[in-house]
Image (cartoon, rainbow, N blue to C red; front, side, top):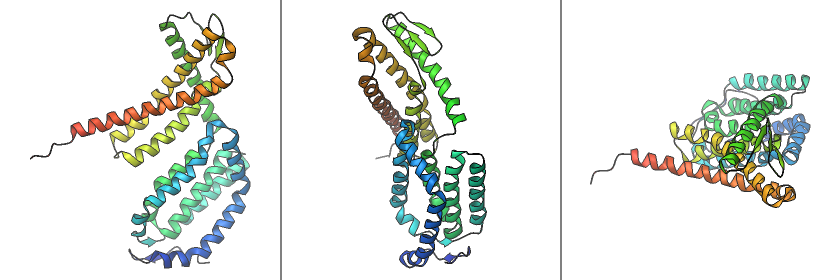
Length: 298
């Protein structure tokens, strides 16, 4: 296996020959990475399966592979000039893995794999290829569950905000409400805005979807950043609406109707509603862009 970092290929070189030459080394590296990260990846997939907050993790690697396939023609035209900077990046990834292992930090251990892969791309394929693959590599971080400190730092404010917004909506509808922290007291039932009802699940999934959507369909600049930024108010409003809907159903038909299947089904409906709102924002941005574009003279 060749491990030289000074690989140099002119643009337009036959990629089938180049890939055939690299195949043994890539296969060996893949086996080594699989052996090192086997337990880490197994635990990651297990969390995707068990934790509804990160079930979108199954889709992230598939989407990244699609992005690479989508720009395959462009990537084939890039020169292959490996750089020794990749060695430093690989060593940094290994250091992150060791620090994460010593500190029992799953986020660091899982993220280190992305850093190592980025270093291997730099070392074998070079800077221009790395720039071409940068977005798919960065997007892979969406499959990594957030550290607990960050997760709860986001969740608690969202719980308070969802409770306040829902209480305000219910009062606007003429329903007497007593708000006690994250607990909403109604005449017939009490609603507790728990961690699962904070909206963090919708926010993480919707944010990842918005970033992918913006990358594929919007130009870099204010349209992209505005589109992604709207995920926060959309999620807050949609989640408050879910709490309100649960309260209305519970008031009219009883607690049994406001829990169980309906509660889970309402979550899916509200997420679909949030996605429709995101589509509406995209349409508005497109409309503004068309109105600002110069009209061709006849």
